[in-house]
Length: 397
Ligand SMILES: *Cc1c(COP(=O)(O)O)cnc(C)c1O
Image 1 (cartoon, rainbow, N blue to C red):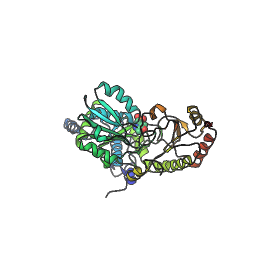
Image 2 (image 1 turned 30 degrees about the vertical axis):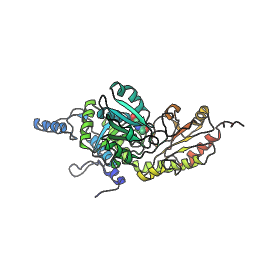
Image 3 (image 1 turned 90 degrees about the vertical axis):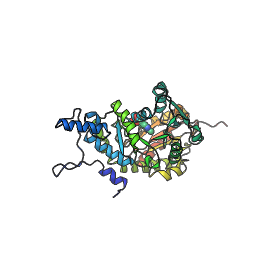
Image 4 (image 1 turned 45 degrees about the vertical axis):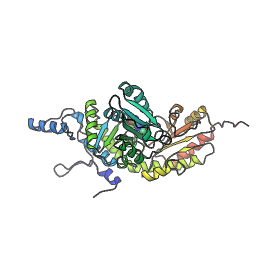
């Protein structure tokens, strides 16, 4: 029987009974050395590991807690194999390094999570891996694929302004040219979008965000289906020794159990805030794909089953100092990097980051909100007082 995703999230990775009973949650199994009953048992496990099976001959390969989390994330994404890594960025770098060799080329969406550009300008460049950026709205992707293009790297909705990509169409173009497709699925947290079902080959998650959900954990994951890709990623994964601790695996698993209800509430609150902002005189554009006025709304409706708590908006009448004043005047919104925890956050989107996106050509300041699980009315009242205090730049008469 195939269950709804919400049901699978609750039951995936449940530990088996031992002698007729057992705890609801998988135990935290910490290990470096694994002991074997016999030389034959040792050989058996080592051979199975060498064949790519998920077994542990050593703690670096993870134990029961890791297996349970891998199963839960695979259930979430509809994948066959999950690799757990120490951060979302590690999942991204692993993808590039595992799939590309010197002389290869990768095509990357220009509204990508900014540290990907740093990775490209430093490590990838030194390894002789070439990266070019494309605009989904402007460029003909098929024409940008070169003979040495091996990877199409996507993120949808993308960072800061949430540009929604046509993933099935982009994957189809890439596959026609034998190009592997990876997509950062952190915005959807695996729950409100399943990229693998849309043709993406590698789905990447920063579990740091909504999967953890409590701002107390760094973690990443890669999810794949194709056996040859599993092999390719497993080689790089094993080579780098990217182990995560059992306590962190346990925390992520604990977060996953409430992912569906948290995301639904983040979305309800964020939609209320987005509607409020859209009607405010000081606000220009509101970026939120679940909002009917968002240019990505139709694609979002087609491919996604929900949204999250990220809302950005522009302030056409304000300068950089005004935007900073607004951030400082908010009382319920913490100022900090990252998002996906239960609490609300605010940040001025760095103008140099926005300049890299061809999605939007505005020059006014953009504020990024992460709408948490507080009461939406309280968050709106806080924004109301912050926006009221904003000095208005006088239009020239
Ligand atoms: C935060 C984030 C990452 C990186 O995750 P970390 O765990 O912070 O390294 C990657 N992609 C996106 C879209 C993110 O928002």
